Image 1: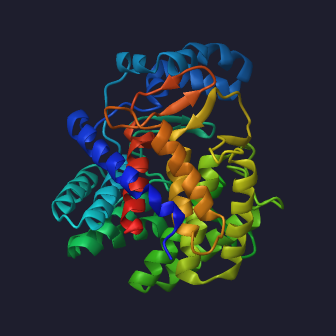
Image 2: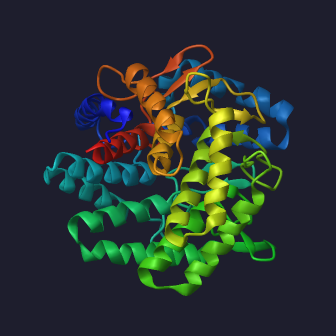
Length: 402
């Protein structure tokens, strides 16, 4: 029986076609939400905020104002750049679009983004990995340009996996093996209770970030199955056990358990749920599916409003001016597409997200609105956050809608 949500197919296809035309004109580099914080004065102000919130609020206020009310001013402090996270999602989107349209020319476009990923890998590591093309000031210290991030490399793995599935290119398979080897060998994983290990964010920290553990757990589980690596599977299961153990009674997860980032937001809830569900598909572990069901119930009740639009935070730690965020739409659609065969409400969630996104967020030139703020709207396109992810989500929907 056709799903009611499939009625969005023509509009989604039109949005994808419009976006590709815009991307052809705009190019594959963009500005980024972190531009103001990636330059030295911005990094110092942000570091001061983490050390002394009162003084830091004064120091960061000018950048917060510009970011919120004059977002295009970031062009004055930092040029456009290429982002591995975006390249991976663009590749995934074009491979999905090739399948949706039956047009092989889009395979070449996807392969071009994989070529870009191979060129942008983090230097100094024997295995493939990727980070950000900027110095990232975090609550745990400075993550320098190119430092591999556990939250980025799984997307590269999936992009090369999609490329291998679509083209049969054996080189992509070797890159996938290398990525998984990096996650196993180079990302620290520390036991926090018997059988439950927290994965670090990078090779050089010991944070207990929930979504990083979910990413590593899924990546190692899926790669272990493909490459017959029992050690990888055991390590992945330990990370997944930590994520399950970290889930609160109401179904939610704090971003981190080390005290520095104690918030619950829409984006990272979706990311954790997505990784747990994909890990369940690989392992058939009932505890994973139970955690997903509980977490998705929380997501529906606390991170969507009465009209089904995403709410950025259920519990916030700092003042935010964002009322809606494009990234929440992209990941909400991706999650609903994954869960629609096991969660009865997923199609309803998907339909409302699509209705809102396609009706309110498509800019006439083809790209998507970036953020809606308490006052005003940001239409500056950031490929990493989340033009590429939204393109992939809609292309994936079109692929599955057929």
